[in-house]
Length: 301
Image 1 (cartoon, rainbow, N blue to C red):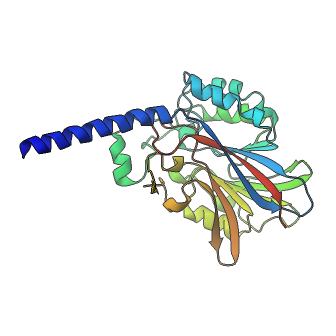
Image 2 (cartoon, rainbow, N blue to C red):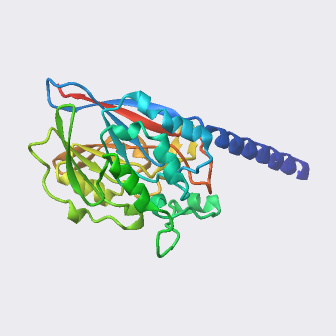
């Protein structure tokens, strides 16, 4: 009996070790997800939107840097960045250099917790048990988020942190609004709330963490499309089942990819990015490859 138990324990340990090892490998199997949504006025040309999120860059991550440097080759018309770009201060310049070509494309951004706070090493099992991470309880941000903001803005990307802006891209008028990170409780949607712009071809909401309070508010105001990140697609998923947690109050069915959100008579398309990276404290993925999304918007029929 004891021999059987010992053999079972050994088998489980080997399987766990193999799974962890694969998770370290999968964290560098970067992918471009390609999707299409009929959200533009009839008769127009397609619009390619590159959604990037949760890069969590460490300056010495060469494989990740190679991938993010290549994103301009996708030829996007618009870039939406939903935050958590860096994991250490020296990554700001490295990321800006890697995106030198991409920053020439019209873009808009908001920040997430790891643009403000450096990651803290914790037991990764606590994340699975509690279902969400925390901001670390720090009183003041310790990452150079203002420098990061300025590097994006000086190239023309629009800061949507509690702001409404309008971009003209390839002949389309796109009305955007965004918030700071709801996971940290920094969101103030009331600063940008109000009816959608009837003169716009597309109304877009942008936020880091897809908490229901924001999805409900943006949808009720008539957003056609909402972008968010933060979830890492669950990061550690069960093959054939999917994500176990979302790190917010969004259901696991919509943890990544394109879905919809309905409030009363209003329905918005929702795209949640599974993200490019992971926290250095948990540098693995399982059944959930790191990704960006090239979302091609096409005219509705």
